[in-house]
Length: 148
Image (cartoon, rainbow, N blue to C red; front, side):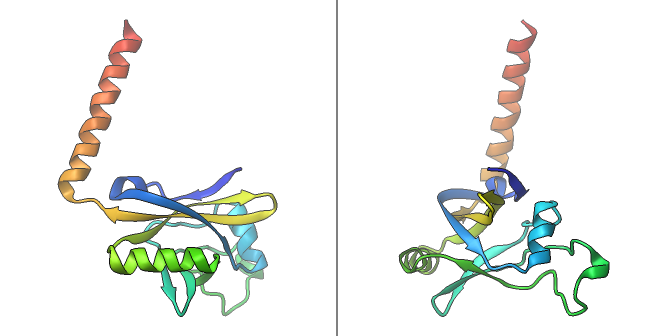
């Protein structure tokens, strides 16, 4: 399982509660572009409309710009493939509990490209400071132990 594109800020900006795996409806050149690592998930989120899930705000740049169709929109909304049970659960959690569905990474499962996303709660500024402080403390402790 190779991760093609990761949202590195997701764990810093959000408290991850529950993760899901979904397939994506892509065009052929988009799949090639993802495999080449040409895309970004920062600022993207998953929404549910009319009983279907969509990935909004992600950008997948063209694999070969000269061979890409003229009307290609790299920021277009992409449909996610989930079961009805998962859709109902995610919709309930995002509306009732006020959680956000945040994409974490795009990776391969066999020959297919999958999206891992999570139901998450946004961190406040003081939570982010605690995370940074804990990371710095751990780094200092590891550095001290390594030098001894």
